[in-house]
Image 1 (cartoon, rainbow, N blue to C red):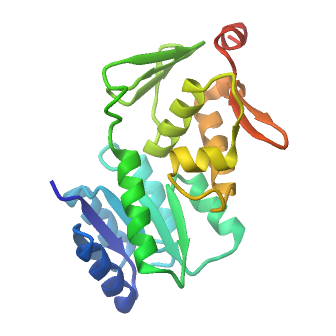
Image 2: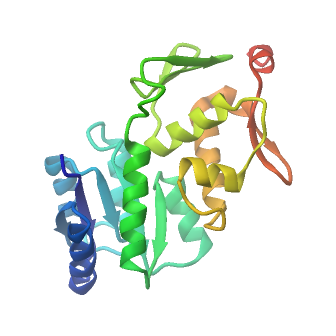
Image 3: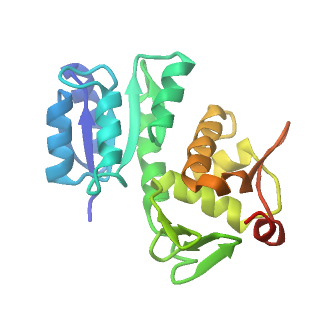
Length: 235
C-alpha cells in the first residue's frame, strides 16, 4: 500500500514544491494550509507522516503537533517539522513536543523525500524481532506489538521514542554514542544535529517516570541503559 503523506504549510509555493517531490517519490500526498484543517485531515485521512510548518494561521505548528500527540488516533503518526525557524530553542521545543525530525528552510526537496523514507522505515514494525519480548529490570518491550510496560504499566511512546528505548535496552550495559544512535534510530548521518538525541532521551526518561534514571548519561560519550542486574537493583 502506498504511504500517505500530509503536507501542512500556508505558503502555496512551498506546499506545491513539497507535494510534487513526494508524489514523484511514489507517495499519496494531501495538503492543508492552516492548523485546524491539518488536524481535521490527520483525523480523517490517517496519514503515515505529516510534514508540518510551524508558522500557521489558526493554530501554530506547535499546537498541531501537541494535539496530534495527545489524540489516540494520531499519536503514532510520524512528524517532520519543516520551518524557517532555525534557532536551537525552536528545534528543542519541537522535539520536546514529540517531533521525529526537523528540517529548516531553505531546504533540499530530495533530502526531505529521503527523510520521509527514513522515518517510514523507523515506523515500520521490525521483522526480525517480531513475536518476541525483551525485559530489562522493570521495563518490558513487546516487539511484535510495539508495546512498552514499566512495572506492568503501559507507557505510551512515539515510534521514535520506542525505537530509541529498544536500541538502548537491546544493547544494555554498552555505551551508545550520539552518532551511533542517530545512525540506528534516525538512520541519519552522524553529523546531523546530535541534540536531537538528547531531547528524545529527555522525553523518554520523563515517560519512564521513576525508572528514567535507568537511561544513564555517560559524559563525553553518550548514553547507556543499565545492565539487567543493575536495573533490577534500581527498583
